[in-house]
Image (cartoon, rainbow, N blue to C red; front, top):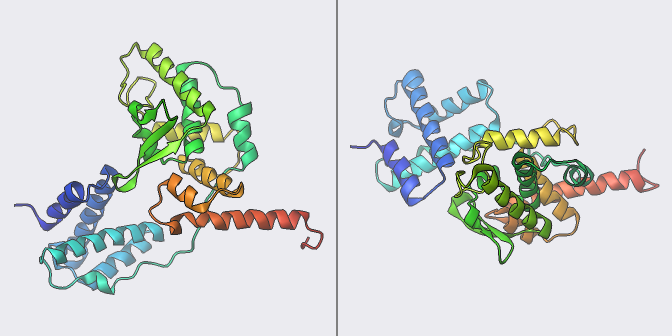
Length: 299
């Protein structure tokens, strides 16, 4: 007979249909919490924990050096878990009602300025081999569509619509969205698909769009390496990740007057609140321009 924790994980997998990444994170969080309860609180099962046990775990996580946003993500796991137990009448009281998330200061998105991005994609010489074209396509897709790393590695060849010049992306909560492609990006995808066929004699995984040097589905670390290696050529930013290109995509669109709701839809955000953080970045850019150009600005 499955434990309540196992039933919860089955629920979010088959009924909520959350992503494999989210399922793994929830499972790890519950395992860590259960281990803490057994070791530090002498509580054998998480369904028997109360708010004091949960607060103690939060304190231990902070003291271990875990950042507040990560602690809050683990708290969100427990909130979903105990809500599930309450609905199933496994518990009578939800211990999370007395738990509040940690307050964290909002960080502005890290992004690459337009000029360096233009230099990378238009001035830096890429070769003509399969690997060279693949690497450029990775950069162009991340920056040209704003998709997430997981969405890029999950792209199928059939997700590219040759007629409409769009891609269909499977995002968070298993929601699909359609993103238009520029003509140059569309042509680059066509070039890449042809090179992939030639490089692997149709033996590569034709189901997925982006593949490794060996023709199998590209993995996250490979994409991260490609992005970091190429961004190092044009920026001194400490953070050089696929998500930085997503931030750059959104910030540059907003700076050029794109509608915030349109950016929200392109990014696949469930609410406008998540997209509004880019307005702060845009405001910072305006302030910077003002300070540099206005005669009355403080020097």
